[in-house]
Amino acid sequence: MNGTIRVGNLFGIPFYIHPSWFLVLGLVAWSYSSGLTAQFPWLSGGLAFLLGLMTALLLFTSVVAHELGHSFVAIHQGIDVKSITLFIFGGLASLEKESQTPGEAFWVAIAGPLVSLLLYATFTVINVTTTATGATAAILGVLASVNLALALFNLIPGLPLDGGNILKAAVWKITGNPYKGVSFASRVGQVFGWVAIASGVIPLVFFGSFANFWNLLIGFFLLQNAGRAAQFARVQEKCTGLTAADAVTSDSPIVSAHTSLREFADQRIFQNQDWRKFLVTDEEGRLVGVINLDDLRGIPTTQWTQTPISAVMKSIEQSTTVKSDQPLLEVVQLLEQRKLSTLSVISENGVLVGILEKTAIIRLLQGKNQPNPV
Image (cartoon, rainbow, N blue to C red):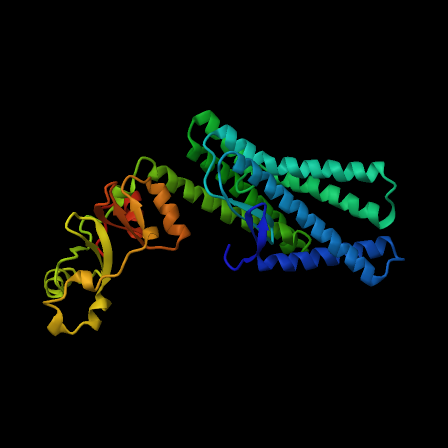
């Protein structure tokens, strides 16, 4: 998520906090401290707030434990966990990839609610079997009830909630198609989103009550993320069977390292005025560098005839190249993760195949021809 703050690692997993979390932390701490003050008038204002803050932190610790449940099962399946983030609506574990089978997907999804149910049972047993009284018993009761609510809420069968991922796994198992599972669970998630929005809007419009305003926010969250999940599933399905080579621009901007700058200017620049960057290859066709039009400005035109491109070109980063047989879906994810617009595609023996642009992928998935260079 944009604007997050990294605060460390949890079991080797990067841990982030979104600024919105601090607002929720303050509101939850104030709410519970007010409740404790009303229930136990003998508590001082300062002590009540400290107890409320401690309760809020324990509640968010429960959310982290919920996300760690997902993460540990994913790691056991060989899936890297990119991060865990706390934000206004709770927590989010970001996984590197999807599970390989519907059964594995089910266990990743159910792990979080199971952890919350275990915490509910733990706090309940402690509260019942110990001599805890007063504020301590009240806090244990809150921790138990919130963990139960967290588990039940996340079991709602619609994406992006855990119940939606469970539903996705079930449809995947029945149909044999993971994308149909995502599509169906996303639609269900959107239905629940509209229901949540309605439950927030109706009291507000007809009674002027903000009592269900939180439902309104949750509804928009469900709608937005369910829609994104459905959109990405469509992209995944269309990418099936395609490789990086399928999206290479047919007339890629490629020049030889031994070409002089004068030949380059005459033969390539004036004929391909839309291209600003050219990939450079050696005699065997292997990618050796890149040259931009701006690189020519530092060389006097009187020297262009004697100066080869190899003297001006810049080295190309390995992270901006992909193999021609790499699945197109992985390429799409790579472009998004690294905020890139183009990648260089090379074959197994290192020979350059061409350039791949994000716009070319979009048009390929839309069933259109390769785009003109940009």
